[in-house]
Structures are given as structure tokens and as C-alpha cells.
Length: 173
Image (cartoon, rainbow, N blue to C red; front, side, top):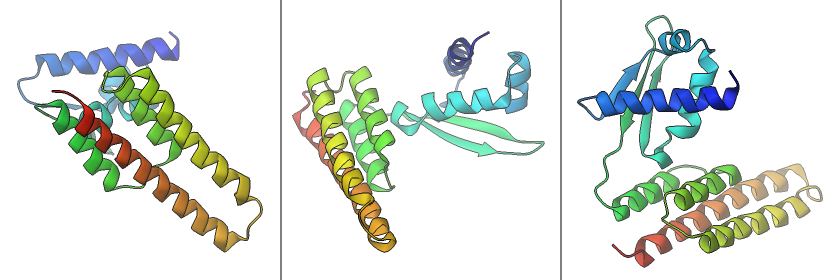
């Protein structure tokens, strides 16, 4: 079975567990799921890291070892603005990389919070920031490079928060 099919199967299995659960969380054992689907535990880790992220509306807790488990909690948000507020708070409390900002925009597009125009505009802005950063990185000393990397991450974070804030205040509903 190829990896993309296994990824979809594992995602659907976890979603079915949520549909059958009486609470807003499920607990799974990595090894049991891997054995059930005859896959390696890293495939399950990949599914969780890419499809059950805070941006998708989930919180992950993980304990490794013999008695290890993964607890996946579904975040309950009542309105679109709650979701956007949650994303703003999440982005504001962490360092955001280029790939994360782009992934977030893709999720917003898929969930129809933004249209293709807004998506392309945001992605283009991120790419311009990255391009300017990369143009100068090879021409400066190591200390300046480290400072520039931190400033670029800060700029991406600020742009992402502004983007989310614009969605929040310009979205009807």
C-alpha cells in the first residue's frame, strides 16, 4: 500500500474514532494503530503532525515509552471568529517559519476562510520577504546573518498576524 493511501486511511481511522467518541478527545497507542494497519509508527506520527495540528483544530499530547499514548483533543470553537482568534493567539505565541505560514494559508483556503486571490496575495508576500532575506544572507557576517534570520521570522510572524486580523474583521458572519 502506498504512503499517501496509508496516510488517508490513518486520517480516516482517527476521524472515525472522533465520530464514535463521547468526549472531545481520543487516546490511541501508537504501536496498536501501527500494528492494526501494518504500518510503521512514523507513518502515524506523520499523519498527526500534518493533519491534526492546531491549525486544523486539534491539540496533541504525546507520551513516549512502553505505556506511551497519543491524546488528540478537538478544539471546540463556536464561530469563524473564534477560530481566527485562536490562530492569532497561536501564531503570536510562537516563532513561525515560512513553511508554517504557507501551510496556514493553504488550510484557510481549503476551509474557505479566504479565496484564491487572498491566498495568492499572502503567499506572494511571504515569498518576497524570503527572497529579500536570501539575497542578503550570503553577503553578511555570521552575527548579522543570525540577526537577519530572527528579524525575517519576526516579519513573517507580523505579516501572518496582520493577515489573520484582516480575515477576522473583514469576514462576514
